[in-house]
Length: 346
Image (tube, rainbow, N blue to C red; front, side, top):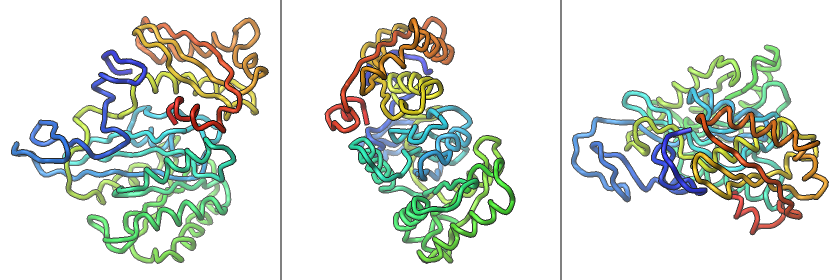
């Protein structure tokens, strides 16, 4: 957790502050932050930079892959589908290069207002990007959801060739993830299946395919090198040393949700949301929202055991002295209520 204070909206936290909603509203030019993309004289060295959106169905390992690429945890992970509920930007700094990797919610067939909102976030993240990385699961067959992801990636990136590459879809780099858990035959089948889908989109020029394991790191370096090679010349969108634009308060609330996802029963994950309601560092109060009275008891646990276990695990990831107070509240059918979805930051 970065140094500095901030309210529940994460304001005034320099190391996690960024342009609102991912807009390219600020650049670093000659060591100075310049509003509106206006560049001032400062003798800045040549830089290649850009935004890289990572997309895929729920639970294909997008968040784990982004964390592996950045070498640090910027987004929570869980075996539960739809763990990611908000686009998270992580910044990779290399000499002369800055890649902003955008982790997105899983594209799925929505059954709630929340699900619809998550799909909208993916669509927003695919606007005005430089490279897209569709992620497939090597352990499962390519289904309608995967085909839709690949087709959306192709539609987004169709156009002039990327830097250092040729072809209208050269900004599409397909990652077949979880190769550490798949057989060679499965991996080849997924690669060939993705090629067939994209071939129908005119992908005979430029698309590259990368078998990777986000868990072990296998193949990830080659994927990152190819991504960075495709970034155009541009400004630094974030200052040196900044690894994410996630506000502190949102991050702590996400750590609580991550721990709950690791402990609660199958019917609960989608019904849980977390929100910081008080921030007087080092004291933080977090509200855990569920949809039914019966769920409240499950989250609290016998004698408060569940909350105690979650609080202990979260504090272990925060600076010494942090005090995390957890409260549970019922909001009936919040996943179907746009007002609550907005209030919870989704």
